Image 1 (cartoon, helix red, strand yellow):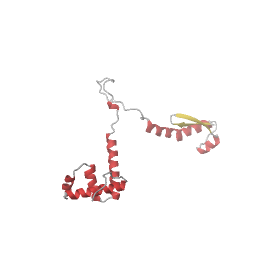
Image 2 (cartoon, rainbow, N blue to C red):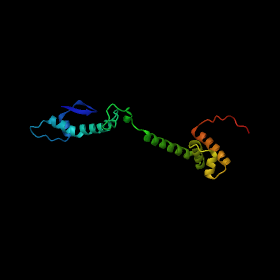
Image 3 (cartoon, rainbow, N blue to C red):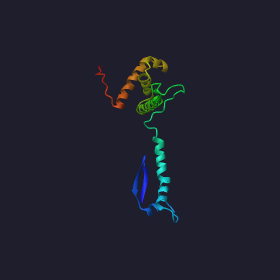
Length: 169
């Protein structure tokens, strides 16, 4: 018997044994019924249709931009087609937030909390050392020294070679 199996958008034909397929699909055929047609029908119900429908449901809009919104009084050719472009700002912001959270988690594994806080505030968020000192009620000199120690520890953790030159003293 030749059995048609759906693969993506096309059918493939396989040669199978009728008795084996009949027992595999648990088909009882009455006299006068076409065995091969009953097997193919059952195979369509169980295997071909759900797989194709699931595939089609997930992939039907790939490569097709959405239809642009058009008011009733506009012609189809008016507009620049910007309406068909996908807005990915939310996705990019979410990905960046996840990357930032992962980066902070990696920092917190190997550094003290006050080092992580000063690195994030000064180096990432752009706060000045004086602003951070005022925010935390500490002396600016203390914040500067803590930031230097935090940056040194950061370089050790992430394997960054400092190019500040030889120190004297």
